[in-house]
Amino acid sequence: MLTLRQKLSQIPEGSGALFFIQIFATLGFAVLYSTLVLYATKKLGFTNKEATAIMGVFGAFNYGLHLFGGYLGGRFLSNRNLFVGGMILQVLGCGCISGGTTHLLYWGLALFLTGSGLNVTCLNLMLTQRFKPEDTRRESAFLWNYAGMNLGFFIGFSAAGQYQLDGNYSGLFIFATIGNFLAIVLAAINWRALKDLNTPLLDATPTQFRLRFVAGALILVGLVPVIYIMLQHAELSGNVVITVGALIAAILIFLALKHKDERERNNMWAYMILTSGSLVFWSLYQMAPSGLNLFAESNIDRMVWGVEIAPAWIQNINSFTIMIGGPLTAMLFDKLRKKGWQIDLSKQFATSLILIGLGFLVLPLGIMLAGSDGMVAFKWIFISYIFQSLGELLISPVGYAMIGRLAPRQYQGIMMGTFMLTTGVASVVSSWFSGLVPEAKEGLTAAATNPTYKSIFATLGWGSVIIGIVMVALIPFLRRMIKDSQPAEPGAELAAVPAAELHA
Image 1 (cartoon, rainbow, N blue to C red):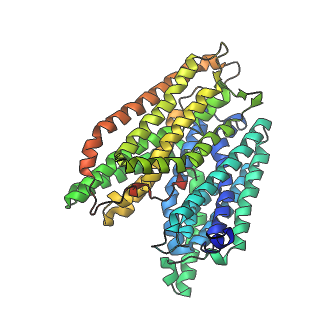
Image 2 (cartoon, rainbow, N blue to C red):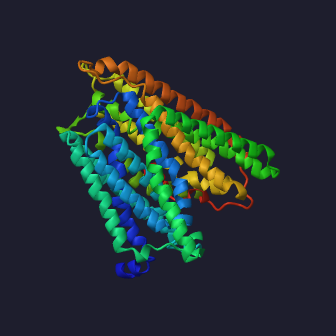
């Protein structure tokens, strides 16, 4: 049996460093994800609708820029350079936000989003490049990377909660600045080990590289004022994201209609049906940092065993469930498949929609059982997050693997872009739902706002459950449509790059 030292010596150079870099690179996003809406409403005087609209654009740009980040890194700046450049922008962004003014918030978010939106893909690409195509250790490396990301979220959420209780938001954003800066330090220490491998940029001559580097740097810097302007017109920007999403969906429908290969055409239709289901799931899921955060702040009794639970700490329910439930789910599915159970894409998507619907439906039940002061017991939001996280375990790992399985080779780029844009569109739709929550006004009690929350959560919950049931009915139809060019190995749909982009 190999010793621990021998096992560590066999890890490809740079992959271990990327695990620790991932932890610190995640801190800034974790802080903003859990705090932005509360900071904007409690400290800067934004209305709930204004704050949730900004959160929607925040999510849309963060997720929407991921695909472009891979292209910019691989062909212009190098993944290593773009990652560090993006982290520098994140550091500057958190530093600006700590200034405590609305003007600095917009500039800080513009800087941060440009960095985080572009560099997440670069980190994943640097990791996958450490392994040869046939190296089976890649999957384990990404599982460790995913664990590092969740550890970063745990640290970020925990710190955010403590600063929220103290009301020291400036100190919180300085903490995020320091955390992101440490990621840059670690990257610098391991600079040689993180060099790009097998990218188109490596084929460029020195002159071509310099020209591409300058062009890439100009694009990187030029995106900042564009995002700054769009953040100031968050509702309009959200509509632009929705319009672009509808346009790309129309293009994909057109491509499917004219595609000649019947098997691939049916796979494309199945992809669009499943992606529509994922849009519903992520639209509800992304209410966690906005509408659900506001509900937890004002209508949940957060005193548990004599300890006040900060809103940001509630997000760790998801982190713990994913970290513990991920391996358990993989083992459970493996055992069920060995017993002959058919667990496939359509069944997982349908179940995830029902689970997140139930996660929202328990909240109206909690509201009905609230005390005379209207405060809802903490256990109800705890149960809600457990249901949502279980749904995530079913839908998140298979999303990107679905594209590799269902997309014709010539359409893989646009179908990957469509799937990533779906998450951005969902972020905007989620902001619309969150914008319906009642404003926190002086003298307005939880009992007075509970009916509105009850109506919103019940409508969304039942809507998701109904769509999930429709997808259950479509399972036989989808199974007939989805056909591989060659028999898929059992559990192949789970062998995907972990969806770190869900949060970061």
